[in-house]
Length: 188
Image (cartoon, rainbow, N blue to C red):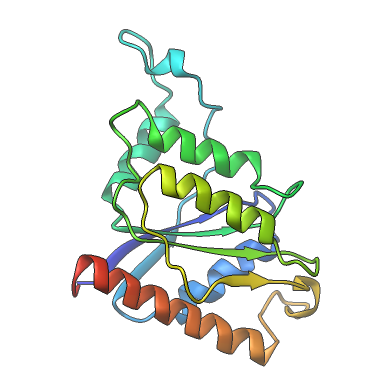
């Protein structure tokens, strides 16, 4: 059986370059990975009061936590907003890491790709996200690092990845992630 990998896209835009790149990675993934985008846009903002005894936990939090608890690994694909991760992505990490001591993230092999129209390719977001993942105890693939810059020129009008070099890199990146998952979890 293939490893269940949740793909979390840090952009809510339907036509975001990050969502397009996530789909490319899913398409290029080896059979050892079963990858699916897990939506995070409907998660209410994290509020610890709602995790206290007697409180009503938002159903979207419960569903997200259950889905992430079942996932064996996580691939994050994120844009950069103001040199950091989008609020929706940080919120998803917060929701999954709480209540304290019940994190859904711990020990799951992760990888990070950042996609941007800019030249620095989401470097700030990529590294800010890695800081959070260290704290929630996710071992993150170190190499190859995935920074996709100039995203406006690597996809065609239909949203397909048209740049051969970027496609080759994406294939190497997802193969490296599959090897990382296998190294940490064993063969599927």
